[in-house]
Length: 455
Image (tube, rainbow, N blue to C red):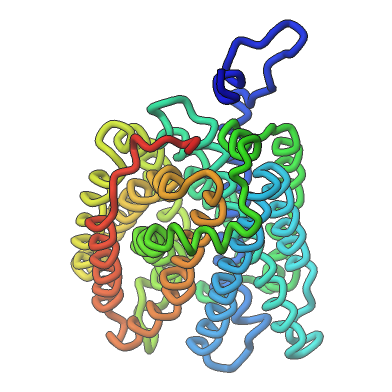
């Protein structure tokens, strides 16, 4: 009888079965980390629009200050592939659990410290320098967080339900958005401003720090959940059969370079849509209608409430996409969704120019497509790679795409918005072009629905 057969034989009373993760713990452990990840992202993204141009980049020109703030925002994306390689290496060598705990701690400490930073008025250019350092630390940690959470979900999923389980880390994005923006909104309502284009004095002096400091509470909860995890059967089996690589990065580049490239571009449209619907839309929605680069002229409170309504569709369709991807396949589902994103990009001008109803349709459509494209990624990217290099491969593809899509998207969007004289037409075209690249990658890829997750 082979060792594999013995390992699956009924255990004797003297050799109890290895502990497994209850489904509730799998769901919570994969959800809590990405909720914190996206909470931290949205807190920073909101501050990058509302606070940092005033407190850390006082250039005297609003557009220049906003672009400088977005440049720091994008700097974290450059650090993400580095984090993916480091955390991926340890995730594939020593296990998913310890690596996820390390990523969560790094991210939580960096976010908390941002809430304690001095401003430009207090220490000069040392303030934005510290902001860049902590933003890079956030990006480094985020590079290992998503992939580990996705692996916890998919490697512990029942047969035939991997895409459904893979949506649980993904739904952390809308939950994190609602918590972060809800907290900022509550603070803004308690400390209202007389100037709709600028937060109140109290908001800028101290209140903006509260959401960053609050992240410590969420990290403590996340650590408690993750420390109770046990390793997945897939990783345990790989370690037992000596399939763990000394250098997972070298192995994945040697044997799975095609999957790395395809995974990077499959994720591209998702990233661009994600950042346009969150960061850029908040800037565009709040910009005055008579500004040199005109926007929609909504108050911060009004537009964030509109965005939260759209994000509810993001959450619902993230969860709905899992059963669809399990039934129809990841590739087919994403091909149709990506075609929808291409069309959506060409509708920016008519929708955003149609008043309140048009803007709400824009937000609902955009966030619905976001959920439908983001949900299946929790299963598809890990399924592209074998167990021994799955953490490294999926993390690197996911985070390389963050550079091509997320790091430059807000910057390019503001530039195209300026180029169009306040019209979002070229911003929409940019989204459609990126989605067309993703479509090509999907057409060149294989279906992963039935792959052996323990291979």
